Length: 268
Image 1 (spheres, rainbow, N blue to C red):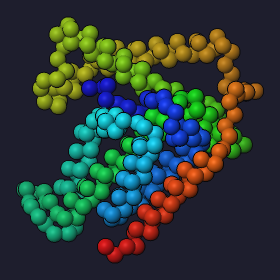
Image 2 (tube, helix red, strand yellow; image 1 turned 135 degrees about the horizontal axis):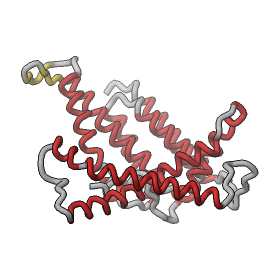
Image 3 (cartoon, one colour; image 1 turned 90 degrees about the vertical axis):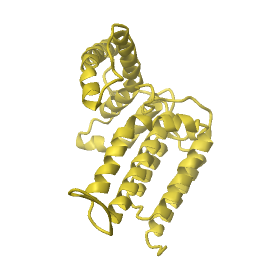
Image 4 (cartoon, one colour; image 1 turned 120 degrees about the vertical axis):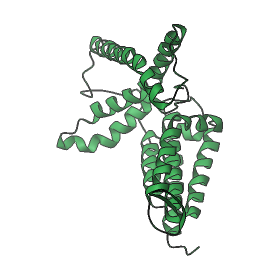
């Protein structure tokens, strides 16, 4: 159940996408996320599909691995689509179920929201799949560094976000171990309705929280023993340098965004 979560995991590689400056990749991800909300026609999603396909092909990340990351959010996806279908007014009424009505406007919005959610998950997953935690920390810190003049702790925020992402696979692995141990003792996590399954996860969450706090305490002790003092007087073995390929990737992204914005004015 938990092994399908790919957010926070890093797949080592030697592709052009892996070698991009982490700052550029973070900026590109934010630009793509914003662009998704500008799409108001199905034809606009074709540009987003082409863009994601291009990144996946260049990064050489298996497409099956990308699809596996969508499995944990299927329930959220179905819930979002269902709510938009039944509770969005507008358009022609197609079917009525008691007080609920299925309209063409609801179907259109449900389709758009579903595609938007899928693209957001794939886009953010590609960032973590192709960027190591250390590079991601450096990239976030460099982006937040200008805000240090107004008291924003750039290094500390970057470190916290990266540690949170880094511990997702660790906690998933820990949850799998706890679940298998409890299933060996007779626990049932698969049968029953949604409410029963949710109640069955309570014995799993308690030891998982205890394990998470223990790991956090061990990490704090390890950092203190190495005299970690945040970003104060910190040096880096590898300095981030923007290469021509970074500008090329940013240019391609901006072209796709311009096409998406231009698509809003199309009449077909």
